[in-house]
Length: 149
Image 1 (tube, rainbow, N blue to C red):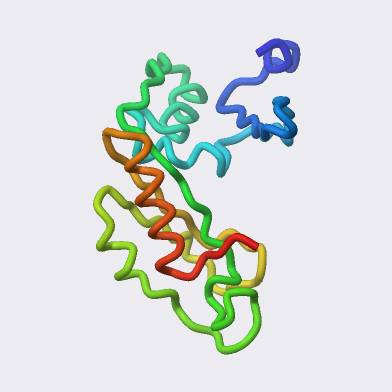
Image 2 (image 1 turned 90 degrees about the vertical axis):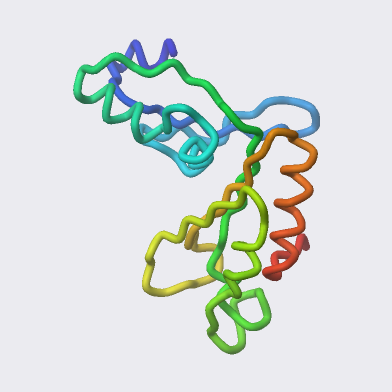
């Protein structure tokens, strides 16, 4: 907040954090809505995009409130390849597997070409209980071939 005040910044300021070895570390600051906040579209009363418009138009900001537990999963370009690593035949992932998951919303960005590491979209799973939401999100990842290496 002090940095934004000193810069005279108006708008959404995305701050991406990681927990490393038990300590909170700032990875980046972005003067715009940020990928790490995309879950706000589905899980909050006002998304980061609505707040950005409100701020830039001089409107009162909405009170931030998350109405649902949420887990967001990024969809990277390697998912569009047969081997799941960016090699082999180019193919569209089987989205129907995601549409079968309760509380899941799929957001594809409409980019024309997938390549490894490129963010092509994301999905958010919402619900009442964080444990159930996490379980569904992990199962959805596995169903479309996202593996932890």
